[in-house]
Length: 150
Image 1 (cartoon, rainbow, N blue to C red):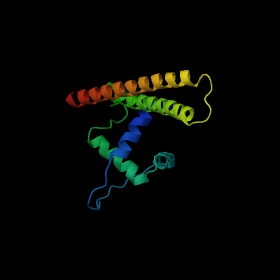
Image 2 (image 1 turned 120 degrees about the vertical axis):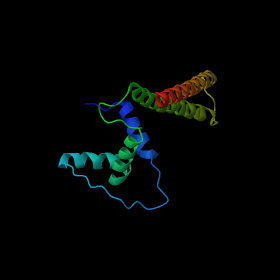
Image 3 (image 1 turned 45 degrees about the vertical axis):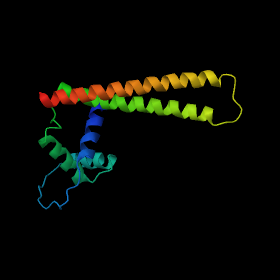
Image 4 (image 1 turned 180 degrees about the vertical axis):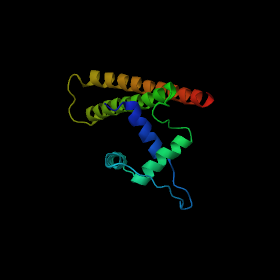
């Protein structure tokens, strides 16, 4: 089954959110995994650049805090928020690419005949990307706020 952008964004958001406490954690819960489950958990933790225990702890604590639903417990709000986060990342990448194009054209040297038109269009597209990113941020905030109220 392919991984959806929303699932990817949710996992990254949850795993990165957990902050280190000022005191050392001393309590422990042991968990048993099959070989396949262990391989999957450690591979995902490695992919997110986290220790396996940190990854498992982050997911458990997020679930207990209501931020991460178990399979079958996800709501449409969860999907919407995660899809918006993935979309925001894609729009930001477009803006970055357009900005790099504009920088390259403005870097000096001898301008080509079409450079002025390309720069004007790049500026227009960059403005649209900013507007889209802002709109996505507003909608994600509304979705998250309405989820908390629900």
